[in-house]
Length: 264
Image (cartoon, rainbow, N blue to C red; front, side, top):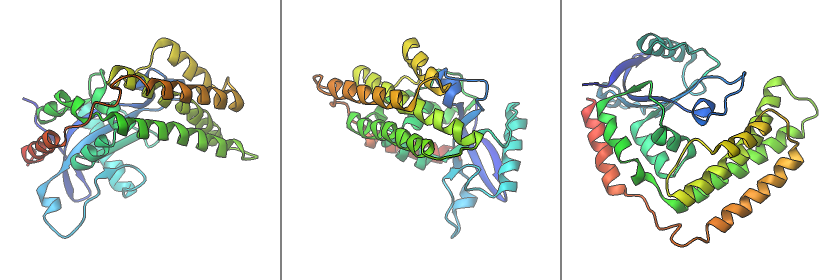
């Protein structure tokens, strides 16, 4: 039996129930400069939530006290034999925040739920969530969310492109956003056609995204391809019954309730 793992953030205790690889490592889009990208789900211990303080349900390096975050990363390194560094992407989501964000059909939450990789850690209490991951799917929500992320990524890339001088990080972010602008549309089209999420694109689709990520395709050509993929998605949306699948909030609410109580 695998129980939740308890860690500390400053003086507060949290119970980790899930930790898995996301990002390029999951998508099979890794380059030599790709970093580690992990996301997890936790429940605050009741001693942290019993008082007047409002607890943060989305933990990362940007919204957590640096020393406390570094200490938590070290705890995870020791417990799971990881080698996380400050540059690596780590995000931990409170269970309720995770459920609510997944119900918006968020791409990143879906990657966590539908990943076929062996997780770094999975408590038994989280298995029912994975067993019922299809209940989060809502095709209209996915259309709005994935499509919005595709357009947003291209917008961010264009903003970076207009800068006269760019730092190495900004240049890398430009390429990543251009690649994501295509990846999100490919993923949306696949989702609408199959009625489920697969984090890994087809080999042909991955090749196209990687070419952009390597900086081998111009902004003009990516923008043109972006428009073509948008039209492809619009055509897919005319298929019969494509928007029939909706989420099951009542069952998910029960799953969240059981998950939260089981960790205390």
